[in-house]
Length: 235
Ligand SMILES: Nc1nc2c(ncn2[C@@H]2O[C@H](COP(=O)(O)OP(=O)(O)O)[C@@H](O)[C@H]2O)c(=O)[nH]1
Ligand SMILES: [Mg+2]
Image (cartoon, rainbow, N blue to C red; front, side, top):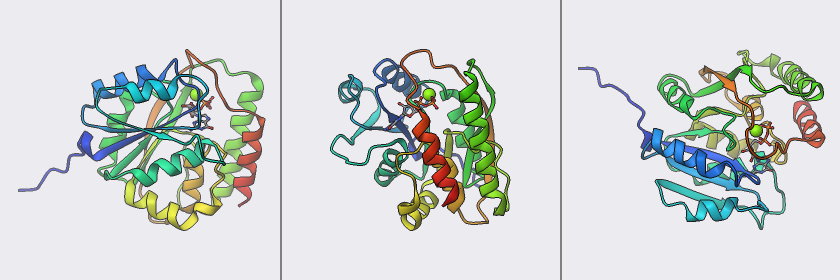
């Protein structure tokens, strides 16, 4: 009889990067723990000035670890996720924003596809909020540059600018070990950077999602992140 390979919640670590998410982090942890009991969660925080870290430390549901990067000199979203990956002991990793713009319900679909693919990318089929024009241009331009950079690859990524994705831990650790120095640690585009370095034969799956609007707190993305992205495209 063929053995069914099911990915269980305990095989997954969810990495949530945070910077001043006191208004969102408890809801995110509650929703994820309710939907996926036994999942491991790492909140990787870059010295939030608000109560984010206190909320995570006091949180008593499920398996939640706080990675406190307060003493880290080089802060940044990508660097904080790379550090979190080092702590992971489960077979699979899923990275998700901690502001509910990425729908936690989609974790299930990403996990299911990880049975068949090495990496599963969340593709924004719709952006719910009304982004200001400059933000649209940044996103469109960033994607165009990233696609050019990836043209040498035997795959076409359907959303290079997405921050919601899952990956086999051993593959991710391998890529990071070999290419860590080249990652733009202060940047936002860790998924794109990983695509630059993954082996040619990596099997990539896709899951569509609606990029929701940020209901609480503020976006931290700014002009400097565009520069980090351009630097990354050129590397
Ligand atoms: N650890 C860490 N997390 C960050 C940093 N900047 C943003 N984040 C988190 O990364 C996620 C996406 O950031 P956000 O500002 O919402 O970007 P946007 O959705 O593109 O506007 C959120 O969970 C943020 O709290 C950072 O420098 N370090
Ligand atoms: Mg956001």
